[in-house]
Amino acid sequence: MDLSLTEEQLAFRDLARDFLEREAVPHRMQWDHDESVDLAIVPKMAQLGFFGLTIPEEYGGVGGDYVTYSLAMEELGRADSALRGIVSVSSGLVGKSILFHGSEEQKQEWLPQLANATKLGCFGLTEPGTGSDAGNLTSRAVADPSTGSGRAADWVINGQKLFITNGTWADVALVFARTSDDGPRGVTAFLVPTDSPGFEAREIKGKLGLRGQATAELFLHDVRVPDAARLGEVGKGFKIAMSTLDKGRLAVASGCVGIVQGCLEASVAYATQRQQFGKPIASFQLVQDLIADISVDADAARLLAWRCADLIDRGEPYGIAASKAKLFASEAAVRAANNAIQVHGGAGYVDDFPVAKYLRDARVMTLYEGTSQIQKLLIGRDETGISAFV
Ligand code: COS
Image 1: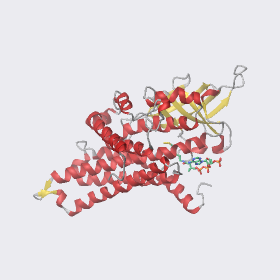
Image 2 (image 1 turned 180 degrees about the horizontal axis):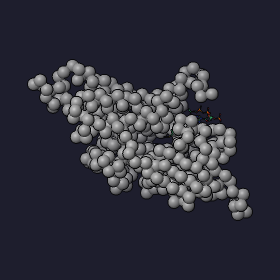
Image 3 (image 1 turned 45 degrees about the vertical axis):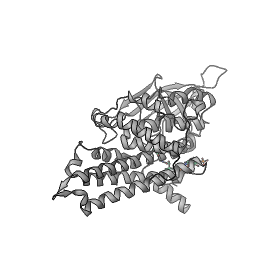
Image 4 (image 1 turned 135 degrees about the vertical axis):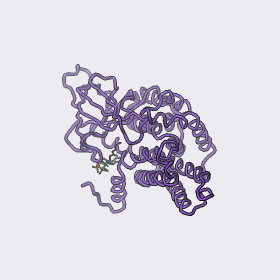
């Protein structure tokens, strides 16, 4: 389904697929078992432009539109969602927060390094006590009045963050912390170098999926940053987080399209060669039923993701389109992976085929960057004008 993609967009997709088929697909099971991708792939991915997509050339990126970004995320999701997470958190959530809300100095300092992946970022929003209710986070940043005269007060940050992608690999953490008790309007964003004294990241092992990706708990104990590390205005952190997550949800949705596509390809390949009752199982109607469902999910999820990307490219509102794409594509990824395992029978339950990993990786997609329930409440609020959150 190529729905009027430009030659450049198609060329990038083909380049990305070719690269990932060589550099990621043969290793993804090993990375999954090792609970770590081989980070040697990161600079190679950067060279191809994965990390620089949608970061303007003036800041060291490769520019590019959001449809291309969606295609790249799809290819990463098809190959290995752990890689997709590394890119879409570092250059997506962190890079785009800096691009749209940072000072010129912050853009000059961080964007070229995130675009060429010599530095990785992580996004510190979720806490042990606040997942969906992000506006109630309790990490706290306090201005230190004893900061030397002639410059703005330093900030001293204390708190804990949970389930942070890239947490132990990141060089910079975008940390959201409370600067006043005014609910979501009392949250401010800070760019915290992860080698700051008092900053500690501990990796969370034993995840169901996304095992190749470093997911961490962050501890901030009297971490001191200058006021120049503040991203955006005091009290605007929640808005920065929410508007950034709108684009993040497109990345998750697109990655899920890749999972569904991978499930489709694996299921067709298996069903056309696996013989039972003297013929390929693809000739049985109930197997075709499973494959047809995966195929429709792939097209529907992809179209929702592309619609969202196209709205962003045209400068139109896209938040609800992102929620719809994320909701549908993440649920479709779980459904498709489950169907794909059904097509594979017992062979799908072990790691000889990619479908078991697709299911494990897909499962978190309905949880992070806003659960399916949160997406439904955002869509419901948009349709009815009534907020379920008040
Ligand atoms: N873009 C820009 N601003 C936004 C926004 C968005 N997408 N969503 C909310 N805001 C602004 C509101 O406009 C409001 O601004 P004002 O102070 O000027 O009025 C402010 O943020 C507070 O908004 P509100 O209290 O109405 O929040 P919401 O009801 O919109 O948000 C939910 C509540 C639950 C929807 C939100 O907290 C959410 O999305 N939670 C899920 C968090 C999440 O995805 N976590 C995963 C983290 S990454 S793994």
